[in-house]
Image 1 (cartoon, helix red, strand yellow):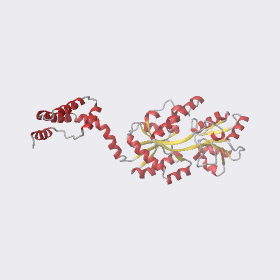
Image 2 (cartoon, helix red, strand yellow; image 1 turned 120 degrees about the horizontal axis):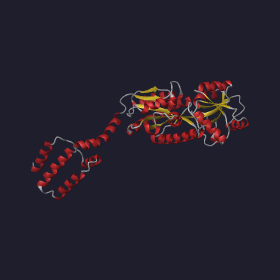
Image 3 (cartoon, helix red, strand yellow; image 1 turned 90 degrees about the horizontal axis):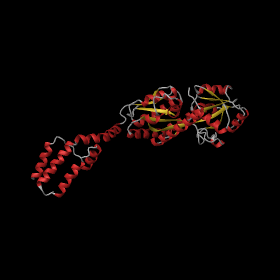
Image 4 (tube, helix red, strand yellow; image 1 turned 60 degrees about the vertical axis):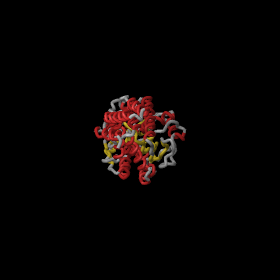
Length: 390
């Protein structure tokens, strides 16, 4: 064994640090630490290269390398930990049940979709996904709860358009800011709002109803499911596009509005597809138009407002998943893949269609862009029309 080898072994024994790391990785980690002393390694390497035959320089180089590596071990680990820990978390995720928070009471469409997806996610993620109902303020209570939760991927918000794209324009005292407090996971489903009338009413299209409204301005009553609700905004868009005025009648829910429409207390109703589909299918109500961009697969015979000549009348109800801001991107990717797999499951899609909603999987980026568009669009309409929330 040569003297240099002996010195090298002795040097390694005398150093408590035993990190074995390729030098390029050490350089990158050291550089990211901000210490700015990589010139030490550079100069050592330069001396080694020019005087590699000098035993003293060789021994000095080896000792210096050991010293630098050992003294920088803490810095290297500190620099690497932020890179390695999230990866480790993502590999281990999920290792306990996930809470899917819904801003409405059990039994409604949003709750139904959340529970249907939670069952599919249980098999995909290998953990229970528990639906946690926190109703109130059009989803604001649930949104605030999730916004203040730990960003660990175990508390998610199954939101609708109201909580994150409409509430900010209606309520000045919100305890959350959708753009800052949430990380998009993905879109889940959407359904159009439909304009329906009593089956006995002598109109068969949105155009005919608009013509009737011109003859009787402000006299035709149209039910909406709450001030500032997507049904209200859909009605506002229709009025603006048609140049007419209806008498809006706000309800706190769809069921009583449907009952009153069938009973003749209302002339029409802007209602979500799931809330009116049974009455339309049984002939009690007549669907005149849908607020979607294209015709729905659920009601392919119902034309859209757009194709009847009323531009800028798209007003979809939708639901998607958000995580607290700061959630690891790797966890977001895992969740997005699981939700999209659930939404493409044949049985899930069949049950969603039966409930009147359409699966609409997306990437986190696509959902984020769509959310931005919705916030901007509805904020402008609410501001321009002076709409006030309940």
